[in-house]
Length: 446
Image (cartoon, rainbow, N blue to C red; front, side):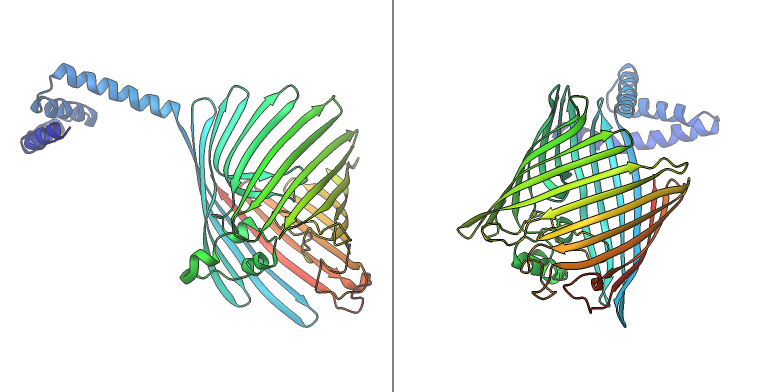
């Protein structure tokens, strides 16, 4: 290769001089630019000792390669801008906040169904009168399909059957296989390279303190990344089991790698049963916890229903009851891997809390819809959910509404507002309500 490179370098000046003359001649005779390129390529090739026949052959092969590449590979670009301006308060106190993220994404496809997807984001947050700017690598994965199998590796989305044990982005790999008995999957992931607020992992007091610590670029390694944990899952789902219902189940384990000495395993399942205009669902989870030489069990359960209302405007009415165990003798507080909040105002953790929720949604115009929700919160012990004293169990009720307007398919605006009323409980009946309003805009470019 070095000999060829030297040979080409020695011929370059003479070839370039002749090329300039022939290009001007082509232009003077008003020939097509492609003809000039063809003639120039042949000329350069001849100067390098390549025959005209071989030069034409090379052009033919190169054209076939370009055509084959363009046919075999397809690309897709996109850009998403997601911004939220909000305010919240309690009594005479109020505070404003802003959150925005710009997400470019790129996808390339090859073969029949293989793909590579990459996305990143630059987030800007304003909270407590301080600005912060956070770079993120978001969903980025390679996907391969072969027969009934599917393999993907990278930074991918995963969710457990209940949707609040392990949900979000994880770094690793997953393989799934379709059979007549359902789809079986196995995966393994690492969490220590994710942005801490994106991963939302806060299983210990130290991790809760770290997740609330602002990002400091001077101490990037200790203020940006999520706790180091390994997560593994073996899961199964069937979309039409016995022709009656949808079922899913998973065995999930997380193992501490950061010295916190907290490991946990989850056996979970969920079923959806459609009956005409109703869909019932029921799910549960048994958690085994090992922490600092001590071990115990914890529980979680879901029970819900959705009714498609028989009105001219598409609408639905839903109910959800969710229980997560608290401290009760040998029973431990339920500890999910990812700490996703419940509600839009109170934002309670999935630990030691029961919620009873009613929600209603209606699309009254092709571009507009309305969502209303009511959630009553009950704490299951007086230890796990702190900040409200040690008397009473009824926290209160949250009411929230959201108006969604999508004038075009690539643009959506959401205006929401609500209030949490502790006066409807017995934990802090004299406390003032907490309110929240927000305006969200999402613009997508494809």
